[in-house]
Structure formats: structure tokens, C-alpha cells
Length: 305
Ligand SMILES: [Cu+2]
Image 1 (spheres, rainbow, N blue to C red):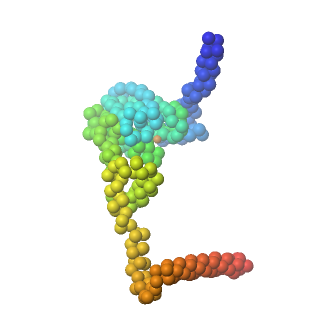
Image 2 (image 1 turned 60 degrees about the vertical axis):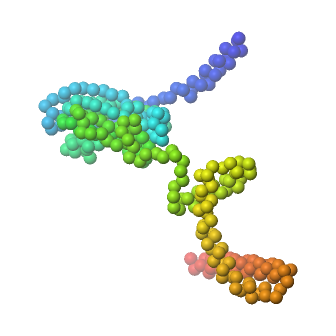
Image 3 (image 1 turned 180 degrees about the vertical axis):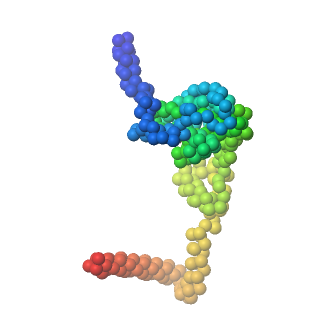
């Protein structure tokens, strides 16, 4: 029993450093560079911060809200084919709401919570933007404009939005839905899980791969191979190599027919071997000539340079 307990304690202490992720909190470290741009040396960034200026059309701040948004690979697990996601895909606030976003990046890479389409006279480039390398937390505040509008929220790091880190923020009733929001709207480019092979050039490469796989398999398995893997084999009959081989054969046929006229089968075989030997000799000569040429060129260039 004591052994069991000590073993349990050992497992607990060994697993503790793995489970306890430390989040760097950037909230108190940021330097204000003006125009709502805050940054720190540890890589935290806020752009479009606005805690006090009312957007045109807002008489007052209608509501004060605080949200916490997580970003990370694990939030994409429920969306097949996606790689990154926020923990929330849809936000809704009253026009003229003062909104504070606490952004928590759970991954060990960089992520952003970037909102687009805001009025440019108030938000540089029409953006409100939180960005941090994780695991870390960062916070920022903005005042939402009046009117019903749907705003894009995404991570702009290359391919992170395409791989799922995309959401929409509706002010008022919004003005429609954005495409490819995981779990909310249909993907513009839908994943294909049918396993069918793409056509044209890709099929030649796939056929070569399928053929090599089939060749590596034991005979019993190859016999049972589904028609899908046999299909590309038919395409590969007219591959580039086959065409070249046929052309060489057609060119050589008259020459060989003349040469073999009146020979016995043994003589024909001997002649073929002699031709192959001469061919190989010629190739070796050409290659060694080429090597010599390259090296002599180098010698000529070196003293000059
Ligand atoms: Cu990202």
C-alpha cells in the first residue's frame, strides 16, 4: 500500500510541471505609443485601443461589456479539418458598447484577435487588434460604432484564419453572416473526405505511387486491392517514359532489322550484347569528357578571379 501511494505521489509530481502552463500577463507591461497603439518588449501588442472617444452617431456609451476569448489548437478539435480556433465564433453587442476583450492565447505560437471594418477616422486601418505569443494574456478596449453591422474577427497570422481562427461580431442585428465561420456558416472551400484522386497531372504521380505501393504489397493483398487503386494503373500505360521508349524502339527497328539479316539466333544475341556494351562505353566516355570539361573550366577561371 505504501509502495502504491509513493508511486502515485511520484506520478503526480512528475505530471505537475506538464499540466501547469504559465501564462504571461501583458496587461501591466504595455507601453502606450499613441493613436491607440500599445506594445511591450515581450511581443504583446494592442492596436486601435479606444477607451473614451465616442464614435460618430453615439450619444453616449450604451453598455459596458467585458469578454474573455481563448485562442488555441484545442478549440479546433470539434471542427473537422480545422487546425486553430477561438473558443467563441460569434459575438453580439449593442451599438455604442464599450467593450473590453481579454485575449488568452493557449498555444505556443502567436495568435491575434483582429477586428476589421471599424470607422477609419477613429481606428487606424479600421482595425482593433490584440496580438500575443502564447501562452499569454493581453487585454484591450474599444467603443463599438452605432448601426447594425457584422464585423470580421480573425487571426491574421499566415493560414490561421483559413485553418479555422475566424469569428464574427455583430453590432445590433448585424448585416448578414460571414462565410467559413467554424460551426456557424458553411465553408467556402469544403473539405473532401471521399478519398477520390484528383485528375490531370496529379493522377500520373498518384499512379506511380499506387503502383509502387501495390508492388510492395504481398500478392494476396494486391489481388484484393480495390478498383480505386487499379484505376490509375490504366492511366500510367501512356506515361511519358513509355512514349520515349516507343519512339526509340521505332527509330532503331529498321537499323536492327538490317543488321540481324541472315544471322542465327545466337549471333543475334551476341550482337545485341555487343551493341549494349558499345553504348555503355560511349556514355561513360561522354560523362568523363563532361567531368574533365567542368574541371578544366574551373582551373581557367580561378587564376583570373
Ligand atoms: Cu493565429
